Length: 297
Image 1 (cartoon, rainbow, N blue to C red):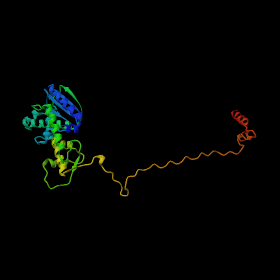
Image 2: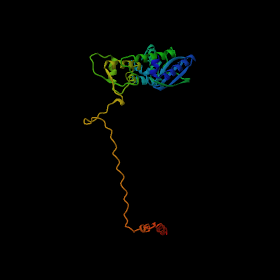
Image 3: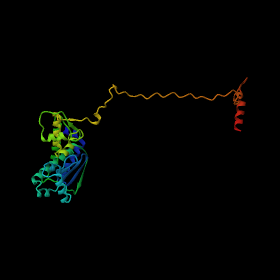
Image 4: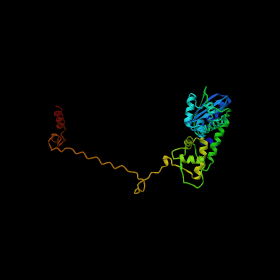
């Protein structure tokens, strides 16, 4: 896993793995909050991870709405009736919107996908918070070490694809049309890829796991269904046709300072000329000091 740690940032990956395994050894019950990008949280019960959430991965509610068993309007109504519960599992089963087994599968998928999103991002720090409860826990928890290793293996599998991508980096747009038919997921991704959305954004848009969408985006890029838009730093600057090359403009030379023109005086007008007129012994300094004395008076 050395190559994976280097791709993620060895310090961040080791920090997260150590913090989660320490929670497992201590049989910690509570929340391990992970700061970073996108960051997230792991919820543990007796040292096992029973839920995980991250702004970088769709939650169980998004994945459930994807199944078409319940639409957004009925979901909002159900949440209001359950006093704002984020995951009204009992009401979903009672109304026939989903079966208990289906809800368990959705929760496991959301847990593993959030763990992948956190591991694939940047980890700045980890903090334990006791006394919290997850809103969509799984019945059987995951060992922390195995959960982190599975997420790292997924990231390593992405790196081996012909066109590897990261969940929050590349922003694909539709490529050249091909004759091969597209799957349902590929059609959805092609419809929403606009050069601004990353694989993570597309996952929220189509209601699929971020890992599943990232893998599919990588495959579609390799096959030409999608292509990557250039980043702002790579966008070429278009010059007018008559301009052959970029020229650096030199500042115009500063004009030389204008000469100082002193007013012209007629000889003897100030009296200094006569006072300083040379005598046979040199300049008359006595006359010069006499003039200074008169000026002072």
